[in-house]
Image (cartoon, rainbow, N blue to C red; front, side, top):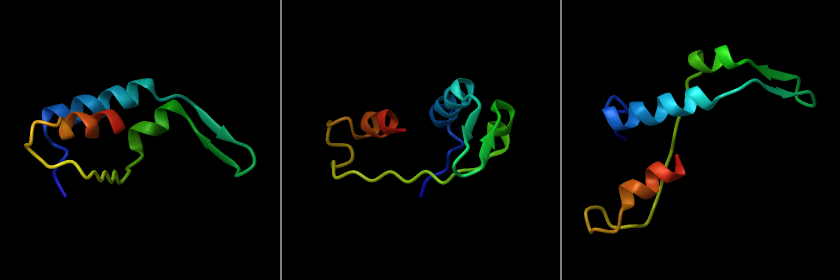
Length: 66
């Protein structure tokens, strides 16, 4: 596991929050307002089979997935 305190991660998470909007799932009785997204904590798991530091852009692939 790695810390998400780095600038690159935080910039990505800020953009995700900025694009968040109200979500309603009547079937499950779920409603999340845009304001609620600021208080929601998530666990992000990313797995790949690219060798790290081999020049194959494994970091870029991970951010694209996120």
